[in-house]
Image 1 (cartoon, helix red, strand yellow):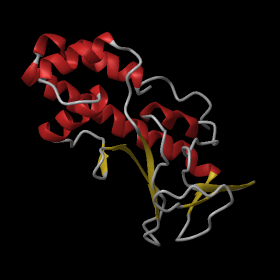
Image 2: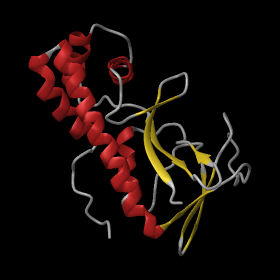
Image 3: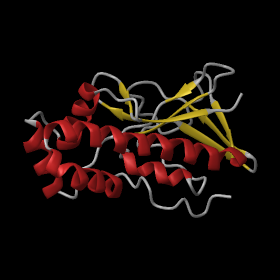
Image 4: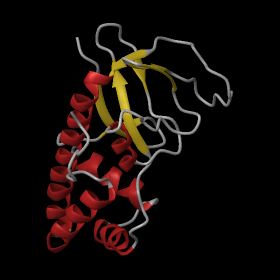
Length: 185
């Protein structure tokens, strides 16, 4: 069974899976994370649109359905960092999972909470990602993010319809959603 890849945002209480199935409440929570604080929907969108430097902490969560092993993104990653998977040299974050690279792919070892050791940490079950799987993983993550754009459009359409297109375009640019996946085989 192939490795599953999902894009997730760190919400302070766990991980919020980002895709087209986000509820209105979850989408609102994502907007709060993006803004960095709670505010009224219209104010949130206006402030996000004014500040092109804002992003969301998160990344790619991997799950091996055969073993149940799961690797979460490390800290200090932004959603747009998912693009590092395109070159098969993923940024796993500061204090993130520990990759071992070989000719066939990556073996990614999970790290524990607040694990600041500099040496390799081989605890827990790793997730094995073959280089041949990278294109599929990137397409999975991109499809989730395209669904996220749809969820943002639904949410903004209910709260500030005249800003919907601008918010979706801004999210697309910020999170590097629909840009070509050049380099994939």
